Amino acid sequence: MRVLFVCTDNYTRSVTVEFCLKHYLKLQGKNGIEVFSAGFKSSSDLSKFSDVHFNRMDELGIDTSTFQRRQFKVSFLEEFDVVVAMGIEHKEYVFAKYGKRISLFNQIYKQEETSIHVPPPDKEGIYLMEIKNMVDYINSAMPIFLENLLSLPYSNKWNKEKPLGF
Image (cartoon, rainbow, N blue to C red):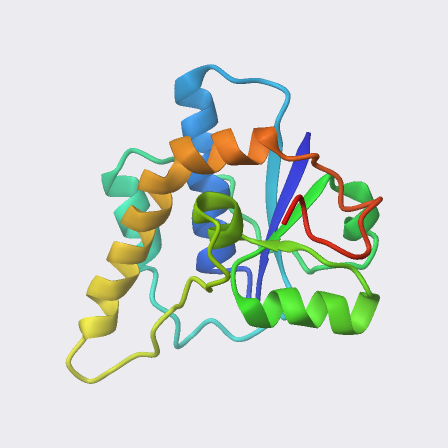
């Protein structure tokens, strides 16, 4: 199975879930699942972005040394068995632009049509804690997320009307 997670910049949300899932798969000794991430604007300027999510994953023992930003391409909708959006805006973009319905991370994880949000920077630095919490949320979701993912009829290729069993 080939799984792709998508977000805007391919720097925070999709990268976090990519490496958390890779880490979980390794811990569980599961093979046969390839995990990647991509962004619709992967060439965006990262100078104002925080790397607190990388620091948090490092604290959790999650190796991100192979991180490389990847630009989303329409061919990914055929090349990957499952394409998962991190936010509703990503899901809606894929449907509007390509006519394909994909699932949200939270749909697969807990059957909720909700986004994983990245808070904007604030002067107090509260967003840094929220990003750490996002990493912890995604990381702790892995057992249930993977179980639910594996129970779905995983193919974006055949499904133009409903995302992955929803």
